Length: 427
Image 1 (cartoon, rainbow, N blue to C red):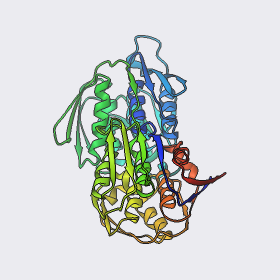
Image 2: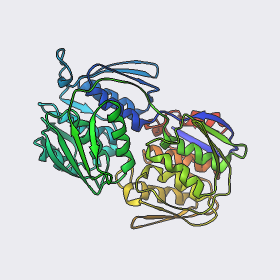
Image 3: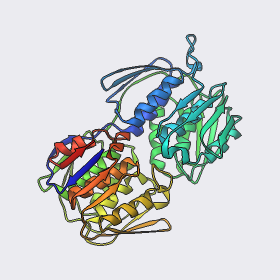
Image 4: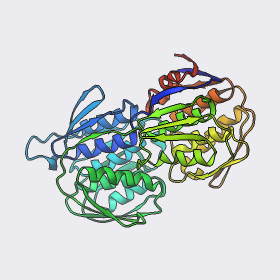
């Protein structure tokens, strides 16, 4: 699909999509629960649908009616009878979170299960998680630390040391799996990044009644396994997707744009987009679960995005229209995403006359007059969204392979059109 994004004056009101970070974690916990979990406002994104399919392949019974999903837990220890056997292979699509969560969960089963994925997911490293699972008695076979990976449990209790410097998702998977291990588990996390995402995992585990404690530094986690029951839960709005709408409003909405379904107290890491908007001098208002943002003169800003790397693309767009050089720290976190995002942002923004320098852990954006360009998404949903917003705020932008937004925010272009964005969509 090709999208032409033309300079626009935005206005109106839209709702943020459901959070795929919350939804996938809820699916994983529901799989391990006894009884039925009802999930309301479930997102229809590719990653969330992949998580549902994996849960079903691991034994859960899933019923979907509109945006409500019911999951009857499928992990054998959750049932007194009616055990369903898991499939020998589970497919996580292109979801990094699903692959890292369900690899640990598959290690609970006392039979070989192979976890596979597609596209750029095949090049992402799993070495640190493999080492942690192996130390807990799990048999692991892989192709040089990448998918497909075969595991065979059970996952034993005791102390597990995990290098979490590459991704906090490794820790998320271990904590969820530990909730159904045979014995208590202590996980020692070394060099943990993206702590807010682990906080979100803990919050959801506690909603399911999991007995989990941790120290204040998030270096040691204690989980006491017990039977957990299904719950009724609503997926909150997604700050990661909403960040693009808020940035678009800050650049193009003189009369204001309102994004509903956002909890300003959310545990999601990308909620800090509000902090950046404040740093950049953007006018905005929080009212209940709605954020209204107005077109503003963007002040040069410096921000550390180490714990929220998914914000790099929308922040780079915001910085491209600032009145001075902007600095975003944490660029080293961008290597193992759907693309090498630091490199791709630098490459694609250069086409639009925006100079970006990446050195060590810093990305410096030198704003200038944004010019018309044709940008490639590199099969990365957040790059496609960033390029589109840049076109709305600057000059005519052509975005190729824009359909990849379905990975996290399939309604993205519909939301922009509802805000009076000038888009031409083909294919």
